[in-house]
Length: 470
Image (tube, rainbow, N blue to C red):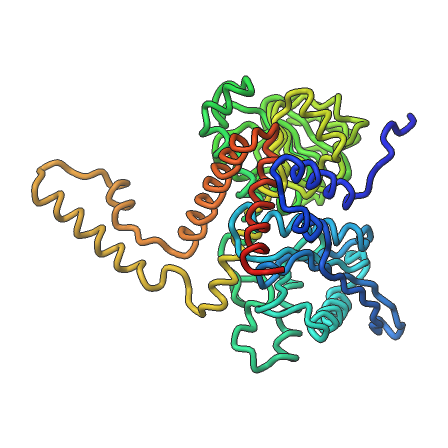
C-alpha cells in the first residue's frame, strides 16, 4: 500500500500546531519567533571502554526555553533518538510546563543506544559518562537543567546520574535536586513513578466533570461507562490503565510491540500486569483474543483510545479508521498534524499531550521542591491534622448519642502524608489546567482542546518575555 502522507518530521508537526495557534490568538510577532526556536542544543560524542573495547556514544541535550529556570525534561535511551526529535520534545516540555503552571523551562535529552544490549555494569559506566559530559558543559544542575526518566531510562539511571553529579559538585547542598524520578531512598517522592499515567486518568476525569462539554460532543454517561483501548503497556500505559480501572472504566484492549489483546468483557489490569511480569509478554492472556499487529487495535471500536507509546502512530493512513469518540494522548505527539485535522473534521475529541501527560512533570516539580527545601511534605502538619480530627470526633460525641461510622472516624483523624499531598496536588493541577483551557477556548473561539492548551501556554510565555525582557 502506497503511503498517502509524505510524513513531516516530529519537529515540523509540533511547529505547525504552534503556528496554527499563534495565528488565532495574536501573539507578538517577535515573541512568536522565539517560541519556535530551540535556544541551544548540545551534541556530545564520548568514548567508554566496554569489555576491553572502546565504544563511541552519541548524545544530545536540547534547551528550548529559559524563560523559567531550571529547564526540565527527560533523558531517553533509544536507537531512534536524533537531534530533531530531541528539539521537538524540548519544545513540547516548554508548553507542557506552562499549561500546568509548573515554573520550569523546557528541555529534553537523548542517548543513541539500545540499553538492552548492555549489562548493568556497562550501562552504569555509559550513563555516568554521559552525565559528566552534560554537567561539565552546564547542562545538568539543580538550578539550571534537571533531567528525569523517559523512554529507556528509570529510577536506576537517575540514581547513577545523581551519583555522578555528587562526585563533580560535592559542595552543592541541593545535589539531590539535579534529577527527578529517583527512588525514594535517594530523595525521590512517592507517586512520581505513576504520575504520568495517573495524570492521564485525572485529565479524563476532569473532562467528564463538564456536562456542557459532554453534551457539545454528544458523549453519554460517566467515565466508568466508557470502553477504553490503550496502546502501550510501559510505565505510562500501565499506570493509566490501573488508575482508570480503579475508577471503574472497562479496558477492552491493550497493545504492545509484539501485538495486542482484546476482550469485550474487559481486562483485569492488575492480573495482566502480573502476567506480563512473569511471561514478558501480554499475548495469550486468559480470556482475551490476540491481535497480530498492535497498530490494528487502534482501529477497534471503543469509546476512548489512549495512545501511550510512541509519537506519530496516528497518521493520515489510519485516521479514517479510528472509531473512538475520544483520543487522550498519553504519549508525546502520537497524532500527526494532518491526522489531527482529519480527526477534528470527524468530530473526534482530542485531549492533547501537553495537558494529558503533564502529570509526570507536575510531580517532578513537587520532588524538586522537596529536594531543595530539604523537608518531607506533610512533616510539619500531619500530626496536627490528626489531633484536630480527634478533637472534632470528641466534640460530635459530646453533643450526640449517635455512633459515628468507623470509616468516617478514620477519615476525620487521618493526617495527610506525603503521598496524599502529592495526589491532591496532581488532581488540583489537572483540574485547574483544564478549566484554563476551557476559558481560552471560549475567549479566542478555538476549535479544539489542543489549540486551547497551546493558547494557555503561549500566552503565559509571551507575558513572561514581554515583562522580564528578551
